[in-house]
Length: 88
Image 1: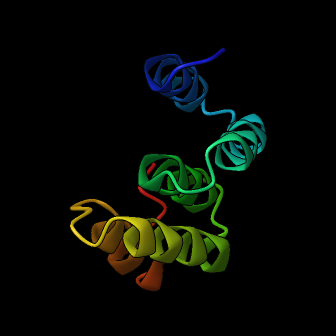
Image 2: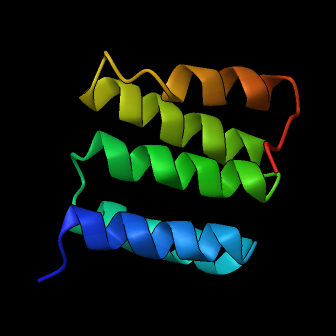
């Protein structure tokens, strides 16, 4: 069983490697495993954002907010995507 800390560690490692395709796949698997996790959806949003897939990123960030309206990070991600900033 993989816990959230392990998932975060793996996501961060892929981010540090700038392996956006693998990060997207990893985060997609994470949201499948934890479909109501705002954290998982936020990281999927970042993965899409880093890959310049802004529409998918915005959708993921919006889902994250749906599960946690107090999510402080997802609205920033949406704003960056709407401006075409990858955040890399």
